[in-house]
Image (cartoon, rainbow, N blue to C red; front, side):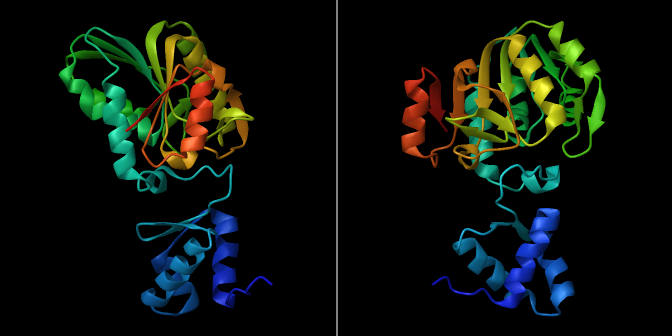
Length: 254
């Protein structure tokens, strides 16, 4: 028989179904209990796999949730930094590349200063802002409509501009990756832009922490056969990694 959850924990899960993330301060105010009790509730729920703890609160674990940027930046930050450093090793001087909008792709940016003559195409306003002061490279921003969840430029203008390009490497962010559906993403507006990026590149490199692997999201946008290289972290499921490699995809564990 399944153990019944305390009422407060049920209400926390109800809140997460509505808004995808909650903070400790919000729950303290809502329930009138101490932050210690709230953290105990969150820890108990995480142990049962019903939410995921982040700094200062928790997020839902359900598939297809497009979390705000400030929440995603706190998740697996060390893993993302290692992935970004490993991805940068694939870049060379005078290279041309696309940087997708995503918190893992963003971790490539600090490593670009050691290269000269780069041409970087991006739909990320955050990436563009970081690269704007780097006189050693040329930054091309796609244009388009601003997606407020992660400051990505999307829509027909972004797609058309990207389809005019031809680059060597495209670094792509994902919402999920499964053997059955390939690459998926929770944001429908970003899917067509990602497809255009992949079409514009000689080599497609997916960067994703282990939480994205084996996870499904709302919209599929490419089969795994379109991926040349996957860079993830050492916590990734070894069985799934072997299956991906069996498809001919190069996999690097950072």
